[in-house]
Image (tube, rainbow, N blue to C red):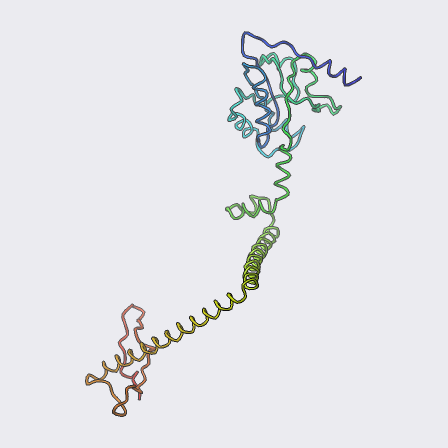
Length: 300
């Protein structure tokens, strides 16, 4: 019976036909999102020719009656101005509409979802009770799954990640309202998390290699033997080249010390038993000049 009576009280005046229909929508519009935009789109498309006015409450009214906002009133006004459905933004909008406000802005209809929205009296009275009673209420539908409160809860849920991201971007812990101990704990936890991710990736790689080796054991062993043999061959060749280079370098230095040629202990020997100290070779003084090799570096 009550539901039938409520439906009977929500009636609408006929819209004007000789001018654009002036539709008014209001709200807080904190962290302006697509749910807000869709409600304003519905209000704008309520009639074929609509002029949409959007009222937004200031910080003083909002903080006292609803709570702290993330964005300031100036930021919320500016967000609304950039919505393509909005024709005019009315700042410092009242929490509850009255006839004076409706007449001042020549409002034909007030657009909002039909759910009762409590006013500031504390008695649970619907904010839109007045406009409903005079036939100037136009119902819109809420977008499920998105709201300012939902967005804030997502941020709170991943609070530590947001803090670390902004610390890495250059914000100080004071900017973020984080204590010294909290900052250090977050950094340690993030470092451990990164280390765990690296270990996990390495474990996955090892698992893949082991799995591949198990599936193709003979092929894997053959390839492994080939790789080892190739490495040994390269190592042996490298050692030979290194030994040849060292011997040639010794011969070169001996030639500088003895113009007549290399000195041999026994005729027919093809290896010199002289020792050359390379510790001073190509060293530089502090001023950048090269050190001349000393004849004292040659010893029998």
